[in-house]
Amino acid sequence: MASSKASLPGTLHGVVAHGAGDLRLDVVPEPNPAADESVVDIAFGGICGSDLHYWLDGAAGESVLREPMLLGHEVVGTVAVAARDGSGPPAGTRVAVHPATPGPGDGSRYPPERPNLSPGATYLGSAARFPHRAGAFADRVALPARMLRPLPDSLTLRRAALVEPASVAWHAVSRAGDVTRKRVLVVGSGPIGALIIAVLKLKGAREIVAVDLHEQPLAMARELGATRTILAGDADSIALVDADVTVESSGSHRGLASAIRGTTRGGRVVMVGLLPSGDQPVPISLAITRELELVGSFRFNDEIDEVIAALASEALRVDPVVTHEFAASDALEAFEVARDAAHSGKVLLRFGAPS
Image (tube, rainbow, N blue to C red):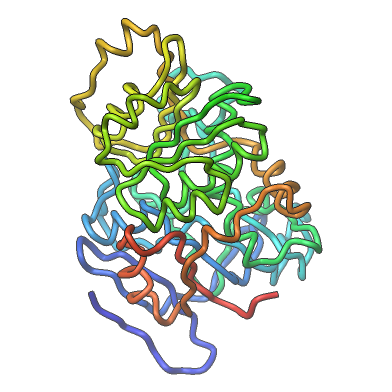
């Protein structure tokens, strides 16, 4: 890893992945917004698993870095300059960011009411296409005004930094159907799994059983509403859970295998953890004989508006998910901490003063 931080006053910096093992704090230019773009002073950014993969592997799944890319899609901030075409919120508005841009791509079919599945969709800080879609881990960025969601006065920017991952969790729980009074198994209790547990509690799940490789995430899971926790190595206990619904959020074939074994006959498994590309060794025969429903969950759509309202009212409790906060100038240290799943949850980068 390297740093190219400058010391000139007023210089803008951004967290840029240059390739596998090469993360830098680079000087970035002042934004040059299009007519439908707003300039946003970024306050906080949450480090996501995809950000870690771009740093560690030079790729996130099949999205391979072909040029240096500004990372970051879990961001909040304040509008510094409103869009010239009059769209979007006025200057001074505190906002969360919906990082997706739906698109037709190659024209493949998808349900129009589910734009997250559009074949040409892009995401901030993604190398899925070339040129890459730059992210927003910078002091100031230009963003399409349609991405911006004004925040209620009761919601701090620091708490709002979890809006994007909480929306992923909200979408995953919606894919599970009605969880009221049900027993739910959550395999993988990192930041997304922990947020799923918080949403499940809000949605009225009767029992929430959390699984993880490490004790620290399980402690966080209990604080957010898990009624029981199991270490991932205890395969027998996981198989005996007999869950009505299971959410797999570990992103590993072993986690998916545990999810299948821990789900009752006729139950549903929601797969939100993104497994590596290619074939995966999982007990599909068991899913068949139990008539399990295996359901995918990918990003989110308009759930972000419900999440903002739930966070503002404090109906959705998420604060324990954030375990560390670093100044953006210490991004290299922050990424090192974030990669240690045994001792960290969500790690935030601070680009501006909290408000």
